[in-house]
Amino acid sequence: MKVRFAPSPTGLLHVGNARIALANWCLARARGGRFLLRLDDTDTERSKPEYAEGIEEDLRWLGLDWDEFRRQTDHLADYAAAAERLKASGRLYPCLETEEELAYKREQRIRQGKPPLYDRAALKMTKEQLDRAIANGKTPHWRFLLSGGSVEWHDGVLGRRSVKLTSLSDPVLVRGDGSFLYTFTSVVDDLETGITDVVRGEDHVTNTGIQLDILGALGGKPGSIRFAHLPLLTDAEGGALSKRLGSMGLRQLRRDGIEPAALAGYLVALGSSADPVPGMPAELAKGYDLGRISKSAARFDTKQLLALNRRYLHGVPFAAVKDRLPEGAGEAFWNAVRGNLDLFREVRDWWDVVSSDILITADPADADILRAAAETLPEEPWDEATWPAWTAALAERTGRKGKALYLPLRRALTGEDHGPDLKAFLPLIGRARALRRLTQAAG
Image (cartoon, rainbow, N blue to C red; front, side, top):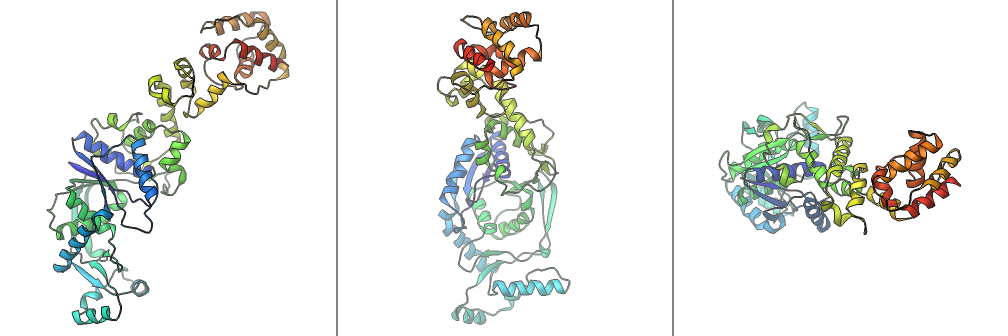
């Protein structure tokens, strides 16, 4: 098995791209296959080096690697040679219509109640007419002559699929400036690199019908490449998930604090009956099966992703995050705060609570209990028994209990209404800092 992930470096990756990359990678690793990263960069106007670098960086962050790497712009000679073979066989033919002329033709067919298909008028041109037009400065673009009938295949996700070629216009494979379109270059690459399985989004189903016809014209064997199309993602309400929605970009999710293990686990399970489990792709690939993916659209719910992110952080050991923690933060700190994190960036806020001066505000009605708390604050050393012993003594002295006792103390000590268990957190704050805050809050 050999698969490929083939993004165009015309922008950064979004969650839809990441889902396709993960599906290909996990499938290859589960079956002992190879994974090719191919940059489809023939759109030289929109392709940018910074996007290419960003794609590789984001894939590595997600935990993916690749066995081979390829850029389409390094293989233009391959596409030119393949185009010449199609021309020689009569399957690639020149057309001289301008965009305006083609638009007029489409409009006329629509008015006549006909589908807006290309009428193949160029096939009626004689060689002399073509040569004369070129001599007069016209530059042809080249269309692929689709065969008749339908193309059928068994899709790895969607089941039996067919595309009626007679209902489609002959696709342009080579532009007037000589540049090649994705529809063509992708087939040439898949043949050249020995791709056995193409896994991509459902929006490519029609492309697959066309590309199977091109593949046959180039000498590819029927069934040599298997296809699987994942249903597209929607938002939580079932609406279209825009590729240009910034919050769905991997770069933005990284900035927001989403962990790669949470995102990978969520995307791998999305659209299947399996409950998402956080994990890196190397773990998730075991037993991966495209057959578990539903034929229906999958809903990408950021609330579910955040819940999985929270679940991951609550269980991750100190060794896995120690290099990401603030300087000075040790295992006791991580174990105290991890169960209270939604996003890793919140670590900094809790580190400030135990290591810096923070602004404390308190309800004047709590002044008495806070003064009593300062007066009864135990001497160090402190451990996890300090908090329950201190609050028990304070309850007996003041008569307060429950929220009336604990909330004023938490606010004074941490500046927050909620947070880590103070049994573990209080020793990290330390007596001097705790006494200063209690005194300040008591006024």
